[in-house]
Image (cartoon, rainbow, N blue to C red; front, side, top):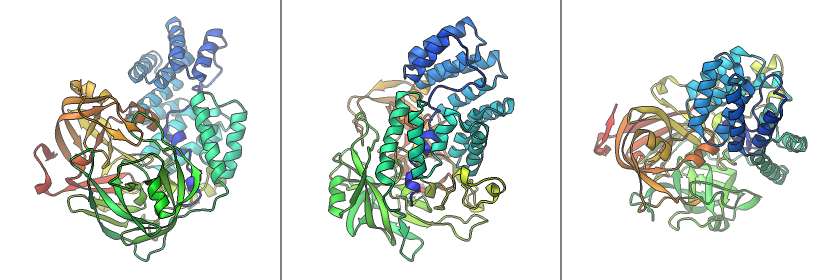
Length: 563
């Protein structure tokens, strides 16, 4: 990992999350006091009040497209997802060929996790008005979730050519710049007053502070120094104070000090407690808040450097590690996200207690698939280029001009499905998160996160109320990096279908996952947890957005079947 760790800070926030700020409408906005008032409410973060103002305008004039778009986005930002979808449907029924409405519908569908539908809406808007940058940006977000990084790059390049000075495009373009250029660009953007709501301004200022603290630091490539290219490492059985199931983990040496880290497909990078970092002599280089499941919000922490990291037979030098100040469980020293090994083909064999890492399939144009360790994971959810694209440097769009654009070998690459992986299941990538299409009692597909760090399968309260009955559960306690979850529920019964499997769940744990969905930018309807995954051999290809589940029939308990 190189300075791309810094260059990726905002990619996920700006490509993965819903477009921030007041939605742009091609053509002049209405020049009246009501519209200006609604626009100001939106920009100040008062989304419910803005929605009410826009609703009144729509009622007076149902074909007023800017007001319809304002209403849809205000409802989205207020997390009134069903109302936003209903408003978009009504508006398009009246004016099916209004490009801004098609784009707004795409934004709603993306937030609801309906990726194929969002792609169709964005492409419709693009065909209706090729001069509007909005649909290009929208479809770039979809392609990125599909692991089609080159196609996403091309769409963003087109949007930049069409409207380089639009606020939406400038926000996106910040993510493509090297650290020093981005510092200057963020400062100029903030000074211009184009940061259109308090949430966006706060995010940009935090990014700016972190970039300034890190920009003069050396590069930390986390390069492979051992001669082996693959490893077969024993998985540890870790006790758990909160679940009788325990967890699975790895012995990871930081600067020669052995640590027991829980292997977690639902987290990113290597995350250790401050006591562990001090024991290993890690060097602090920058402050960072770290968040997770729970009601307390982000926890204080920092980024540090490990001179050496060893996992099995693989040894790496000069690696970034995240450190959280909050105390964690005494029986583990921290977490290691499976995305750490994203430059490898990952085989997590919990029944066989083995972690196997091997080279990814070579693309037809590659001599060998590059290898590196993504030890630092993400900063506020930003995916690392070396995880997505095999560790190669990527050139910002403005550095790849004209005829050189198509031939530039440093541009991102689309997912490659090797012949031997044709039957693997495609997943959606949002940073470190792997979201697998899942049917719940025949409804869906919905997006579920693959998470070995979750003690059990979890259904979101939103999804549960669509398919079954929900009741409060005061006996079950759920904790995460951000503390205890206050409200836990149970759904009566839910059958989950994913990949080639079907599992019948009795009394499935149900939580409000809206905060995670909002920060991710798409609806996470549930989590496939350790209780399920511990009986399967889970294979992951982060580069290409593919997973596969293998099983031994003797490990399949009652209620689980092949489809």
